[in-house]
Image (cartoon, rainbow, N blue to C red):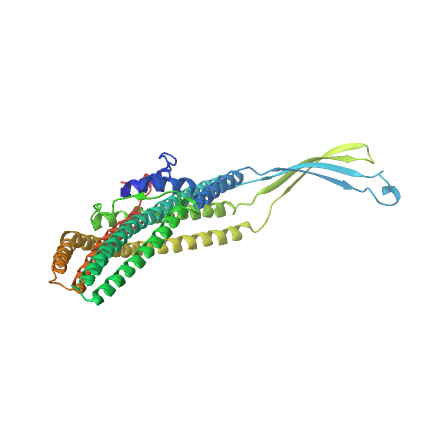
Length: 416
């Protein structure tokens, strides 16, 4: 299934490089992944969130704005201050002068938030690729199950016709014909169920790229070839560099940037303005200047710094817990992966061939009148059950491998 290649495709951000298959052509896994990465609505949302983070970072990095204002005094009094004789008009231009490196701290915070959102977008791409791959595997498995069901219907129909002839020739009892008809009806029900399962799996796969209806017929995939998997120790060694751990690092960098903003806010800013005042009564102008500074900035900044410190401690504790949890989850997945391979190999090399031999022997014995119809149907049922188990085991191996690759996927910049 080229799973490592698909994980690399999901993290590389290269969409539209694979031509889409038409409905008459089998859909390949690479095409399904490419379509999902290009059209999945959740990825469009992540892209929009990234643009929002970039705009927010750019806005936060802007300097404080200039403020233009005016004041009019003594324009409606009594006596000598009546009318406009004593009016005083002031035009001001002001601006907050930031101290303590506040703008640089905000710019660093914006950069950290953009980097984290970019990482979240990469993680979302990986999730979409993994989910699409798992759904693709299910479609391939359901195609095999439907093929088995159709084969079983054809075989049951041939046996029913043979039994009908033998019953007409008084060679077999009529009960064998009823049993053969029941076996055919059960096979037809199983085929119908397999058709419904395949249809549902196709709709689920098409939903991966935002489509309500599947625009493909068959899918092209090989479940019977099981890709090799790295030793558990090699997979576990990647856990400290996985996307989940990298997300914690980005979150820590964001919190640290917020802490620097809080530290910078300890130094109060100066609100400075300069203006011109018109003294109507004296027919003169004069310059005016004002400056103000808020009090109590340090206690507020200290509380914000303490909050950030507590968040960093909590994040590190969660990160340690996640490492332990990921290790045990990976171990469980790896055990299931090895079990699925062992089961598939046993079915493929020993159980299914023996069941085929047993069915052929029972078929010849039934045709020669040495075996009962019950023995034949039991051998047939055993053969098809083992075939289905082999497909189930292969599909389980591929699906579990997708989960292992997703859990241990590392971002390109941390790949050893």
